[in-house]
Amino acid sequence: MRARPRHEAWMRRALTVATTSAEDVPVGAVIFDAAGAELAAAGNEREASGDPTAHAEVLALRRAAAATGSWRLDGCTLVVTLEPCTMCAGALVLARITTLVFGAWEPKTGAVGSLWDVVRDRRLNHRPEVYSGVLEDDCAALLRDFFRS
Image: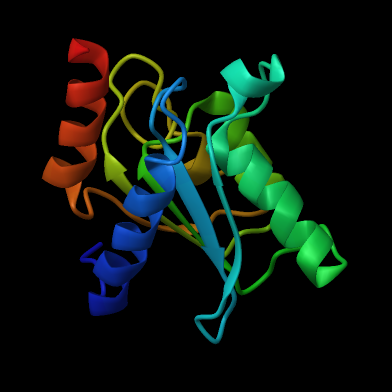
């Protein structure tokens, strides 16, 4: 699907969040409610927390659920700089995220079309709308720069 103009602005916010940790892979995730208000944001915290599940998306989902008082995030949009892995794709489906917007593709672990396509699996009871490749070059450059250094 073709990205909406607000998706680029939201992705710029996610890119800013991605740069908050110098020690972890720079991935940023932000969740917006149906009105476009920011509910939660997170970067990867695996290194800082020692938690293998502390991916940006999972942390943002937890924080958005806490902010709304519900695990059901119907009407919400998750914006993330990198294509979600299987864990994160499964979590956003279970959280009932309505729309997923992501930047760079992840051919090694991506679960929204690259390696697997968890979010579009017809066997699941919820399938979010997906917008891919939003500010893809900017998102990919952030990752390339991190891994070069």
